[in-house]
Image (cartoon, rainbow, N blue to C red):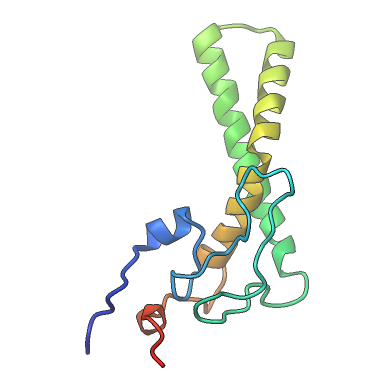
Length: 135
């Protein structure tokens, strides 16, 4: 069996928000920080995988987004404490909420990518689907 000419690692596919099945098609039609918002493709442009596996499928991504938010906030609180040594609660609230607002598009995008790549049973990489289509 031939090895596919197009080879993208699992981590690279995750970071670049590529399809979990073929690692070629983009998950999102727009950039992360665009004013018109983030628009997700309905299907993979390369292998045809339907991203929303069932109605309401991406509601589960809210839990992953919540976990990302909590991890970011705890990390920030510890960093603020170590770097400033301040006990002023307004310093913590201002910095943590400001960073949470700035990272909201990141959390939205990568909670969905995380759901598709790591948290969906039965959805795996198929190297044969990453090959170029021949006519």
